[in-house]
View (cartoon, helix red, strand yellow):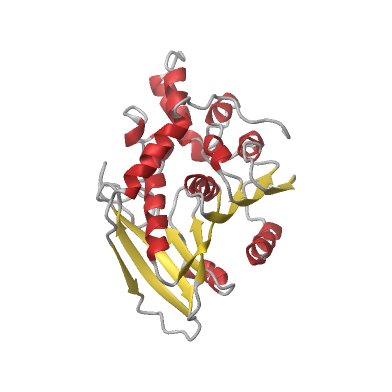
Length: 309
């Protein structure tokens, strides 16, 4: 595992494809509102609803929590797991107590307030990993989610209260994948926290017969549209454009990485495939007897990592 970098090849034009996507983001006007919540009446912390229009006109929502101060504030993008939403305000307030402004976005089409206008209005439940797979890569929902994140990063850089020299990202599972991808596509990210990342080495997950739970869309898609494996190459070539391990070499930030040793949702092979492709300064913590679950020790390590100079 210490040298494993993945099974399916990275597309030759992968870097060029995502460079063009980032150019698209750079050329769109930013349309957003930031409104204080009706319960934001504390002495040391403020709570806001941040709504913005993404590259395709979809309405995307994020929680914004920040400490009350006149100083420039470091930013932390905290991404949620799959499927769901950015969870509760209380969870994010701990980071604000460390002095961070926290931005927690709902991924479109899942359980939150962000909309996916390419399909139907309102949330869906599962299968997002293959949503759009029968179409072009441009219409895959995770390509849209990734660009939503990059639009939000661009908005946050414009906020006068934010310290643009101290922008960071974190998350576990789907959030770990998006944290890695956010750092890969935004080279000004200072620190990146990744915990058992999703969306990685998907051909390996398929070969291990672990395309269940979060990856079940891959299993159903192959049973229905690739029963005799005639379309395997086309399927995994497309999935490779959203594969976390293929973004990993682009990361420039300092990385804290947690791997779960007995994880049957994001198997250990797929996690090492991300870690071993990261070339920047990095630290690995292997939790040998932990599955896809809460890791109290890693929660403490995250705080220490964020508080480091």
